[in-house]
Each structure stands twice: as structure tokens, then as C-alpha cells.
Image 1 (cartoon, helix red, strand yellow):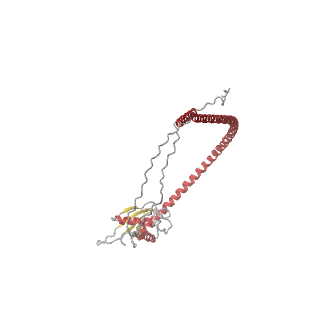
Image 2: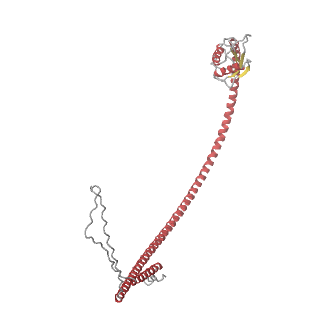
Length: 373
């Protein structure tokens, strides 16, 4: 319940500063009035002072200038100084007329009263204008407060409406989310049931297929074992025959390569080959190996006075196409490490070896290399 508002007209009070200004103005006017009354009482009419004037019967002669040539310089006669006349005595000031003084005093009092009346009227008018301004200001302030209250009320109503709409939207979203979760759960359960049925069906089919496969595999295994046993027996027999033939061929190759090595021992360049597990029937194969190795041996040989011709022997493992297998092994050193290393590099760079005339390479050969041709 709202409280009754006070009447702005009857509740108006002059502010303290306005009262202070009015008091000072009134005091100043009274002080000025007292000063004017004292000045009027002391006022006297000043008499006219006499004036003194000199009268001349004729003008004095002009004084000659220096340029005028005078026959004689005569002293100018001194002008007669008139005797000063005595100053008249000042007349005594007349006494002011009491009736005139009273009338003047009454007029001044009436003037002061009129000015005081005007001042009071002006002060009342100013106070009334100030009161009206204050009333208008209060009225405008009340209107502003009412408008502000209306705006606040409208804002509150809008906020409550928005809040209700937001709450409804939130509840609708929750309902939709719950429906979606329920639908997803139902779909997941149906999918799980379908997958379970499919797995069970697949497991049954797989079990039947595995059973049939095991039975088939057992039959095939038995047949395969039988066939493998027969094939193994045939293979062992064939391998024994091939081994016998291979040993026979290897023996023949070793015998043939011994002859090739003995003939190649005296070739220019000092290269010889000796087979450890086979050889060749062409004496030119040793020369081909020498021609392949020699350009890759970088060693500046110098013959000494003793006439010795040191040599080095390397054993080389060969593949089926003449390629070197692993690093050549030093069998006999020449006594000169730098020469041994140079020959090793030359042998390694001759990879694969030149083709054997028989088309087959021995598994191992020894290469002898002399320092001097």
C-alpha cells in the first residue's frame, strides 16, 4: 500500500542559503538608508567663491627680437604692479529650512519604504518562481519515476515471459532427448537381438562347416600322407641317384681342374688357380682370371737386388654363377701387407669371375698372385 504524497505547495520551505542572502540584502539596505540620513543632515549649500580679474588700460609694447638692429639698447620700463585687492570674506552658510528638511526626510523615508516594498515583492516573486520551479521539477521527477517504474515493470514482465518460454523450451528439449534415448535404446536392443540371432545362426553353420571340413581334412590327410609317403620314397631314391651322379661329376671336375692349374702356373702375370672342390678343363680360364684381377691391383712393385718374387694365395668361395660368396680368405701371405691388401681388392673387384668353359663353376678356388711378372 503506497503512502500519501505530501503537498509540494504547502511543504515548500526556503533553502537556508536563500534566507541568508535575503538577510544580508536587507541588512545592506538598512545600512545604506542610515548613511543617507546622516549625509542629508550634514549637507550644507556651499557659497559661490569670489573671482579676481586684472584689468589693463592698454597692451604692453612688444619686446624687440635679436635680429632687429637697435641703435641703442634701452632698458625696458618695468610694468607697474597693481596692488592686490583684499579678498572678500566668505558669507556664512544659511541655516537649512526645517520644513524643507522635514519634507526631504519624509521623501527619503517614503522612497526607502517603496524600495523596501519593491525588494520584498521581488523576493516574494523570486520565491514564488522558485517554488513553481521546484513544483515543476518534482512533478517531472515524479513522472520520470513513474515512467521508470513502468519500464521496470514491463522489463520484469518481459523477463518473466522469456523465462517461461525458456523453461518450456528446456522441457521440450528434455522430452525430445528422452524420446531419442528411448528410441536409440530400443533400436540397440533390436539390433543386439538380431546380431545375436545372426551369430547363433553363423555359429551353427560354422560348426557344421567345421565338422564337414574336419571330416574332409581327415580324409584328405590320410590320402596325402599316403601320397607323401610314396613321394618321399621316390624322392629319396631320386636324391640318392642324383647325389651319386653329382659326386661323380665333382670328382671328374677336380681331376680336370688340377691339370688346368698346373698349366696356368707358369702364365705371364703370375696368376694360378687351384680347385678344392672342382676345376675346369680349359687352360685359358686361368689366364682369364689373371686378366680380370690384374687391372684392379694397385701396388707399385719394385724389384730388389735379391731377385725374390713373393706371392700371395687367397681362397675364394664361388656361387653357381661364378659370384664370390663372402670375403676371400688369406691362405699364404707374401710378407708384404700392402701387397696382400692390394691383391685382395683386385680379387673382390673381379666379381663375378669369368665364365668357366664347362659352364659350371667349382665351389672353391685358390688364387695365387706373384708380385712381379
